[in-house]
Amino acid sequence: MINRKKILIADHDAINLDFFDLMLSKLGFIVEKAQDGHEALGKITNGYEQGYPDLIIINTVLPKVSGWEILKAVKADSKTAIIPVLLLSEIDDVKEIVEAFELGADDYILKPFNFSVVLARIRAALRNTVLFSQLSTREKRLALAERLNVNLKHTFINFQKAIDELMSELTYLQAKETDVDSGFLMEKALRVQSIFSKAEKIIEHTETEWENLKEQEIGLTILEKPIRGTVNC
Image (cartoon, rainbow, N blue to C red; front, side, top):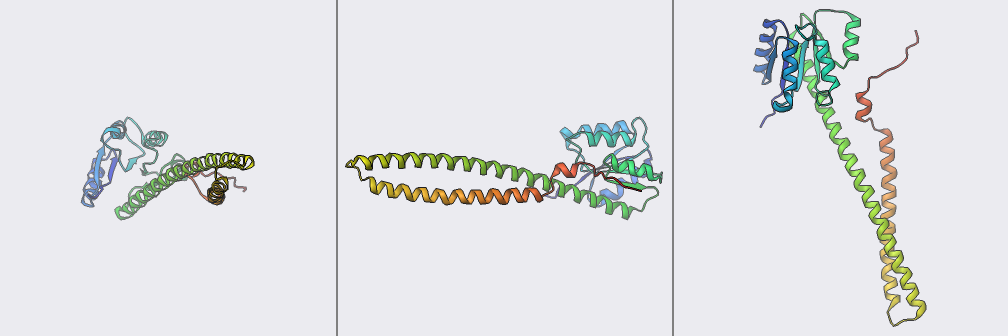
């Protein structure tokens, strides 16, 4: 079954809403519309039960609740922060555009717009969301694998301890010259100890490679933070 992407459009212009609805529906998207900010927030909040939108397009100027406030609310909530938000605006102002991206907007689209360009930006934003989701899944799997590795190492340590105790007991029996074939048992114990020794080296090597990879990777915590730098003019 094809997973149709849901797009929420919030604009005070009914003609603009109908245009997006018509064009995006023809392309297979599920379209939800809102003519004011309060209605848009309600549809986003209801996503907990009905499914959150995969992408939000909002006009910066909306009745009741502005597009700016909706953007802040979406990005401040951990349940919706990953949803890409595209701002629509008639204001071509550098400061406003910069502020939009600083607040977490994924794109800033000026009116009047070319629908083909907007569609390309929608698809790009959705692709980024998929990549971000895949990265999140990868980090969870890595964390699980790391915990398994730690548990495995702990298990080997306990086995090694048991083998050491067994060898100590066999050495004692050999010293007492008992009837037990301690030499044969000692040989078997040494073989087991050798196997565990090799396994321990493999674990140590894996841990070293693991740490090297972790130093090189870019995680979600870094990607979620705004990129800040100092520019000397």
